[in-house]
Image (cartoon, rainbow, N blue to C red; front, side, top):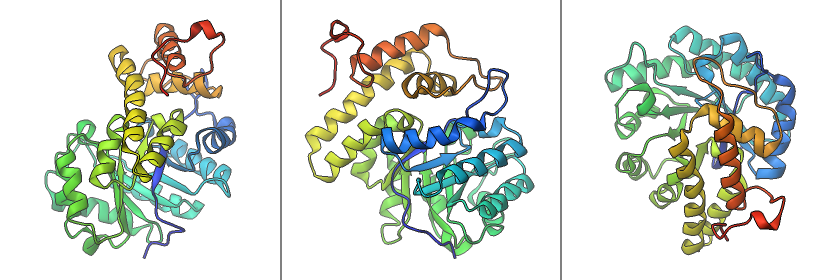
Length: 320
């Protein structure tokens, strides 16, 4: 059975993969990145090599190197280092899963293969089972993101009886807006101690009401402090404050979505906010424009997510 220090819950940052201007992975800044998440954002759990980390755009060797560096630099600082090991090849996914166990990761997650797709629950569970089996000491999480994979098997259906097939199954990263499906995952499995981790940052408060135990997202790299304030208000049943925090976060996310928001723009924002160079994305993604970065910076300042250089820069939009 999987061994856990404690249940994976709260905020989990979907980490960015730092790269040099030449497009090579940049391991040298990950120690600084760990300290920034813990000390500045209050985020102590991470999800490595997922969508935000461009995991499917990296080589197997690069994914191994990045996983090793996060585990090494996060030791005694991070609570959970979960490595995404999904791949189009079962053998590659198994290789990454075994490697994660060997280096001392705290869990593994797997996305559904999306070139030759599993078209029913049995096929998907069979794939996941084979990956989990090579890392029998690690908690196993399914990464549900149908908008990217095109695999429309409902998470509620997948979870039905899953521990009979995958004893190490511990939870779900649910990156979809279907709150009916998410709610039924929780309703039908409330007696199990699964981690129900929501993956749509701008809708997290709705998911908390449904029973989410935590969240995995890209914005927690730089809005973790603000989102933790929302979680604290929700825990105290101060729903008015929690809603204000969510609306504040939504103002920024809504703004950048209209500009065109994705992994490239996340790297630019993180570089801006943290001061840690994240570099460009890997092709076929294109580097965020200077115009985007300037507009995002102004919006972050207007919402008090970045310090002001001058009080004259303030506007009435700032969140209290």
